[in-house]
Image 1: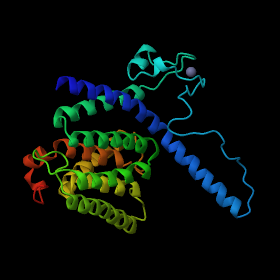
Image 2: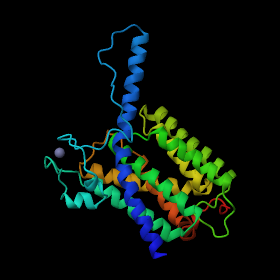
Image 3: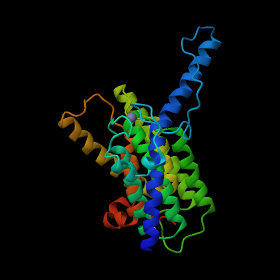
Length: 296
Ligand SMILES: [Zn+2]
């Protein structure tokens, strides 16, 4: 078991390194796509487009990672998760520009989370699925913090994957994080999407402002597709309280304007992760959250 946990941690470090690429490039890829669409639309309307189309390929694999300051390619030995950054003491090998500490932090976090899930759920299909879900949540959290954006290309497949998991999964002898049935997942996805959709439109009608985005609805739908509708209240209360406390603290500390929108995705992701790993103990400790009978 300790060996398995260690291997999971190493795998997590490698995947964390890839998540850094996803977090950095996926929003840029979306922006390129939007620009291309706008150009096509303007060309259709007969307007002259100022910008030429970007020619060079740009996706999660191409081009190779390079220093943003001096454009030198990162050498393979410096690309080793955590160690590469420590070896270089957080500086580019070519020009000495600082490499943000968030890169090794995300690698380390992904490693720790992956190891934690194997330690908690063992060598099971539930553990493997929980690991993939948590990788998606880490990427979504960082992209939402950076760009106030939860890409459909992550949230929507995450939702379908949850329903597919319940469709294929054998009923568990041991209750795991995804003990919910397919029906629980389908009802969860609908409940998650509709609840925030209603809050959004209610808030918009009442105040004329937009409090959150459609990505938040899709993320909650995806989380509850995995966890079942039974986790609706725990996830919603955990995310709303942590979101409110953090928001008030940031405003009080003057770190955040009252009018600026606060991304809700990171709180949903954190609440979903807590519900996934400690959902049952949480419900046992706080029975008022158990509105519905246990899943399974
Ligand atoms: Zn450099």
